[in-house]
Length: 69
Ligand SMILES: [Zn+2]
Image (cartoon, rainbow, N blue to C red; front, side, top):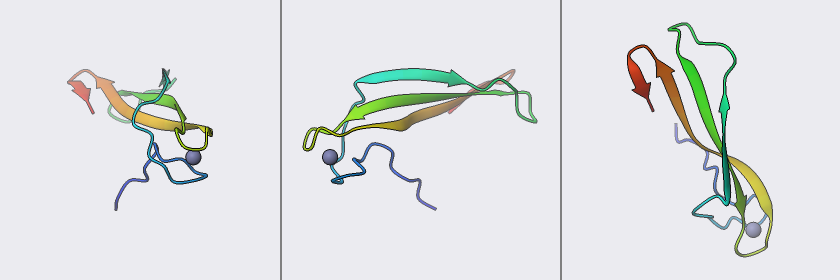
């Protein structure tokens, strides 16, 4: 199943390449394999209509075995 694209303007459908702001959200609890999920969010600004929207830039899992992206 294709992943929903997060960097497309919900108003006009324009793809925004880079978020102007990024931040990380660390999950407060580890998963079953004792890994912590770090989600990177971004704020995008549409170059066409100026709409600002939030999207997930990426996710990383931090665990004893290293980093899984
Ligand atoms: Zn737009």
